[in-house]
Length: 205
Image (cartoon, rainbow, N blue to C red; front, top):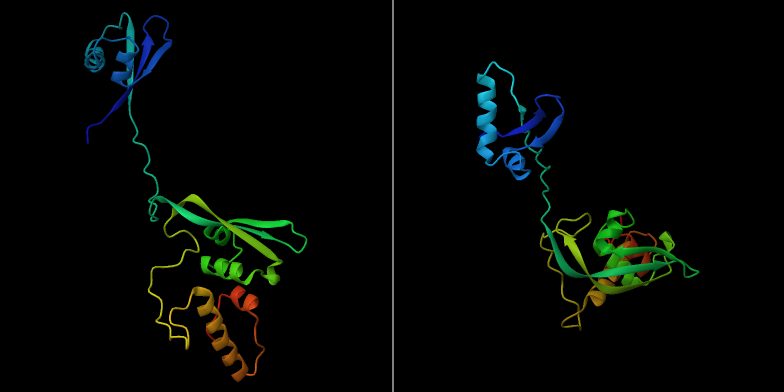
């Protein structure tokens, strides 16, 4: 790679610095008619033993800009996302943000948990007694903290009597399976809200 230089232009009589920059920049400032004249002027000055009459040139190698650390996340994409507002028992705002932002703050384990809490309508262990959400457009980073991976989900068994269950019906069905396992293990059953806040486990720990 060709080296690039920064030239310092000094007044030959007083020694005062008059300008500093690349040959192109010094030409644009009116000190030279051509950028090449800066390079040739510096070379001639080095060959001559006599002191320069008008300008004295010095130069230093231009340092390349440090490369930015690679960001393994993909670029932002404008998408419509849910924006959540969460309130305490007195209606005071506790938290707000997108699911990914709430996860990044350490409030929830993953974005699915935020959705589960919304469907439950509360999350008493965290002091959330009500919450709302609305659609907004926001730049979203792929692989953002808490984002769900692209690993395909396990195939779920069909729900008897419901041909095409929605997410809430599926979640209630899974809660019933969970509580059945809990009863079998002799442990305490969970309500939907507490089960959702735990991340919807498939079986008791």
